Image (cartoon, rainbow over all chains, first blue to last red; front, side, top):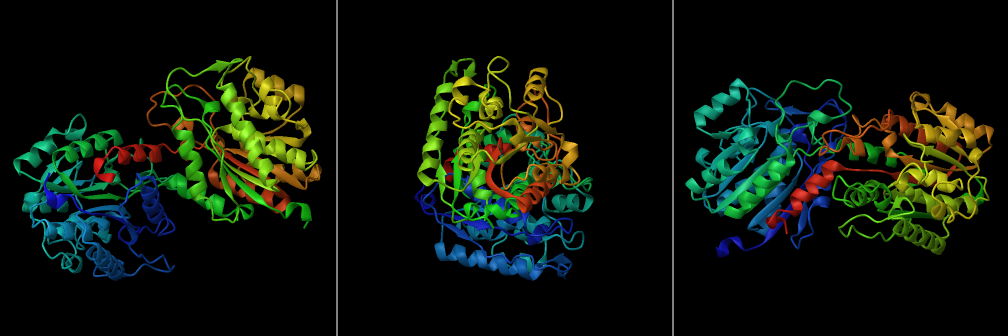
Length: 295
Length: 295
C-alpha cells in the first residue's frame, strides 16, 4: 500500500443549490436537505465533516452574470471550499452535495496533489461540458471547468486542469449536439449506462490501461433510473410534466457494485455525491414544521 | 387555554418492525430507518426524545404465536413503551414509528390521562381492526386492540379501551368484508379520502359535535398516494409486482392542512407517524456502508 494514500480524509458538506437553480420550486430547499441527508446516512467515520458556507435564497429574481445564474456566489463558494480543503490538506475528500459543481474545488485540489496522475470517473446521465453559450445553469459546466473550458471565470479557478485522457464519462447515453462537439473535440471517453449494468470491466479495464493508482469519482445520482430511485429532479411529485432531458438508466445496486470494484483496484481519493433531491423527506419536513404542536 | 394541556411533551422514537414483518425484504431495516429519519426531520424541540428498545432481526424464521408474528416481542415493546411514558407522565406524546402498533401504548396512556374524553383521528388507508382469525400481521390490529378487540393479549394491555364514538377513521376508502363487519358492529365513523381532499370540515365538524377538547392523531403514511409519496410499502422499487391491497389516495399537502386545521380547533395530545419506508435513503445507506473508503 502506497503511503501517500494512507492519510487523512476530509468530509465536505456542500449544500450548494445555485448551480442547479430552479425557478419552478422554492429555490434552495431541496439541495441543502439532500446534502445533509447524505451526510446523515453515511457510515460513522473519524474524518471531520466541514460545511461549506452557502447563502440561502433571498427571494426575488436570480442574478444572471456572464450568462449563468449566481456566478459570483458560486465563485465565492468554490473559494471557500478550497480554503477549507487547504486548511486540512487531506489525502481524500468525500463531498456531500449539492449540485454537480460541488466536485470542482475538491477535484481541482486532488489533481494538483496527485500531480495530474489521478483518473476521474464522472458517473452521470449528462456530460457536464456545456458553456454559457448554450445554457445558463452552471452545474452543467463543471467537468468543462475542470478541463479548462466551461465557464471562463470558474475554469480560471482550476490551477492544474484535467487532461481529457484522465477522464471517463460513465452512464452517459445520449447527449445534445453541442455536448457531442465538445466530447469529440476533446476526445473524451464515454461509456453508456448499459456497459456497466452487468459488470464493471469496461471501467476497470480503462483504469488498468492507464495504470491509475488513484481516482476521483463524481456520482451524479441522476445516472439512476428515476422510476426506481425517486430522489431526483425528474421524480419531483409537484411537477406534472417534466422538461425533456436525458434521464438515467441505471440501478443503484449497479452503481454500488461499480464503486466497490473501482475501490478494489485503485485508491479512491475523491468521492462526490451530487444532485440528491429527497422529495418525500422535504415534504415531510414541511408538514412537520407547520404543526404548532411539534415545536 | 386549559392548563391541563400546557405541560410536557414526550417524543418517542419507536422503531418497531415486527408488527409489519415482511419476508420479502431483509426484515427490520426499513422501519427503523423510517422512524429515525422522521425524528431527524422534525423541528427542534425541548421535548426529550426517548427510544423504545426494539430487538433487531436475528435471522431464521419469524415466530408466530396465537396466529400473529412476533407476539411476545411486540407485547414486550408495548410494556417498555408504557414504562417510558409512565416515567415521564407527559401531557402530549409525539411518536415516530415504526409500524402502526406504535400508537397503542401512547394512545392507551392518553385515554386514561384524559378520562376517556379524548377524540382519536385514525388517518390511514386501512381500518386496522383485523384479528388473528383473518390476518397474521399485528400492525393491522392496533385500533381493534385500543377498542378492546383485535388481538386478545395485546388488547389486554389497554386499561381503558376507547369507545367507538371517540374514533373517526379518515382516508379509508375500501375495506375487506371482515373489516366492514367490525366497522358496522362497532358503528365506527368512516370518512373516505375524498372527503378531506379540499377542506377539513367533515373532520372539524365531527370534533365540534362531540365537543372534543383534545385529540390523538394516528397518521399511517400509507393514506398517501404512493405514486406521489414513494416512501411507502407499495412503492418499494425492489418489488416487481405488489400484492393486491388498498392504496392511499391523498396528497401530503392535504393531510398537512388537515392536521393544522385539527390543531387549530383542539389540543393535539397525541401524534403518531407510522409506516414510513424511505427506500431511496435505505438504498443509499446500503451503498455508502459497503464502500471501504467511507469508513
